[in-house]
Image (tube, rainbow, N blue to C red; front, side, top):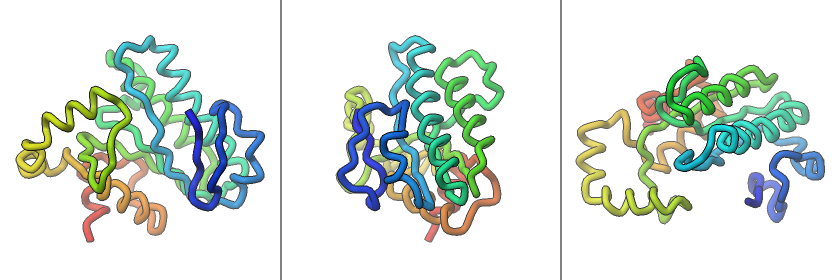
Length: 187
């Protein structure tokens, strides 16, 4: 799994995503991070899912907060993440634990995006086979779903626009659900 930082650092490949010390000089001076890395928890043991979801996210965020305390960090989590860290759903507990740890770091600002269904647009495709198949099956219904559940279905474009706006202007709260993300993204 290579790590490609923002356009200001093209060409960096970081093979060990739990240790960013070799590329700290390249990460210094950044003013924003959009952390969108994630894996499906399907078929994973909690320890393995936590090692990836919590471990990689915090390794990156701790390095970035130390190097760039004036940075805005935006983390894409998921609808129903469990901030109590005590619920019955494994992935939700791990995501909640990750969110809580991120929000405690000394960034200028940190935000958590909790989208529901994400509709890929402009050629975006999930790397997860099950999600790609699901999107193919749902494609004829997405317009209806967006109409019926306007605060649950977002496009990748809406999420990206909201991330840019929140980084520039802030947001009224630190954890934004789909409705909040849609509201921020409105032109």
